[in-house]
Length: 184
Image (tube, rainbow, N blue to C red; front, side, top):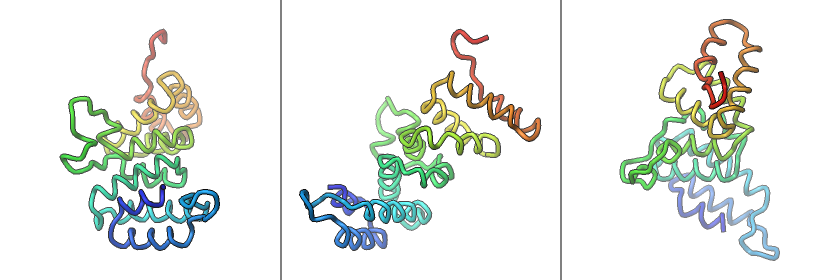
């Protein structure tokens, strides 16, 4: 089933590669569409390739690649997803339509990172220490809060502050600590 879905959403070189991969690695056991572990790894690499060459693909293909990486909880995709945290689909894409749009829906890479969860926490904190784009910093902070909740996020940030190599890094991290209800 995943094999068929992947073919529907990717185009160009990535599509041709995934079709070939699908044809060669779908397991023909109990369920003809059951995918082998090899297919999952190869297609994850292909999906990362779509992210790296995102300017050569339709935005809908890039968004679908991001979605699949999040659904798979692809920990090897965290760095690539952090780099494109502020990637927005085209206007009219279901991600941005409607009054209840949240940052996770508007920015699919942030949503994928939230789906990956705790394995992305260290990389998000690293980005908070060194990132320079305010919008991406805000998205990283929101993703961190979505993954951990306010109280646990504060615990992780305080731990990172204690390990910080310099006062500048510690000060950067302090700005992301939020007073939770009941905290003083």
